[in-house]
Length: 352
Ligand code: SF4
Image (cartoon, rainbow, N blue to C red; front, side, top):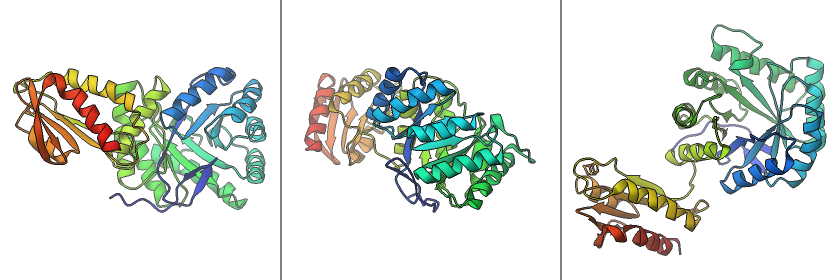
């Protein structure tokens, strides 16, 4: 059981962040914000994939016009991502967003920050202080220290104005810098953290860097909401984020599949079976299943019976066949062609 860092509770719309609330998943919309229909469509898909918060880029006044329509129709709370132009933060708050992300590296004038805080306070919305190693304006001995100093300098202004609806992020594209910055910051304040590795690259690179960076921090109890950065489809970000949370038992997003890598002993077509099974699972729409369900599909008798017995439902492969186990009990022998239908049938029974 992971002991989580004690943080104050902050809300983004109806989503609670920190204060022991479940760790939420955020993503960033990749369409042009002005393309309202496509933006809303992406938000809808992300919600179906169990994203809980979305951030949209607000880069000019046209985006503000679109933002008003997006906020009205979005089924997820919207965070406006602001850089360079403080007025866009004020206009976004007026447009009804649930939170603002400010970058201390490019919104720097104290009077601008104060005005944004004042408006956010009036509307009772939160502000993420989103420090990024790629746009630092503060220098200390290491990048991690610079990120922490940048956040602390900003927080000071917020606290002087008695604004504590704050979420902090300290992202670098370097995993160890990211981990180091969050670790240092975790003992300096009790604000909740939005955790992620920035500019993490294409799918495989992002999956590995994000899993290590976010995973290490979450395992240490650091992190209240997460975002996976991916050069690719935002649904891919969700896939990785859900796997990270599920692996650490910090979230449940449908059945966990245990399958072996296969080797020369394997006498079933395990890869095809697992691929087909994953496709068939989609029919069952189990993403919102409350209880966890472990399904093992294993290649042979070496580790197969052990893993299959340990799972809720398992198959230990033999010669074009396999033995079905349920809750640790051996049920019967199946032909390979019966594997998938049998598993789907058993899952339906389990779900009742
Ligand atoms: Fe090979 Fe059997 Fe282990 Fe799978 S379970 S990797 S087939 S030894």
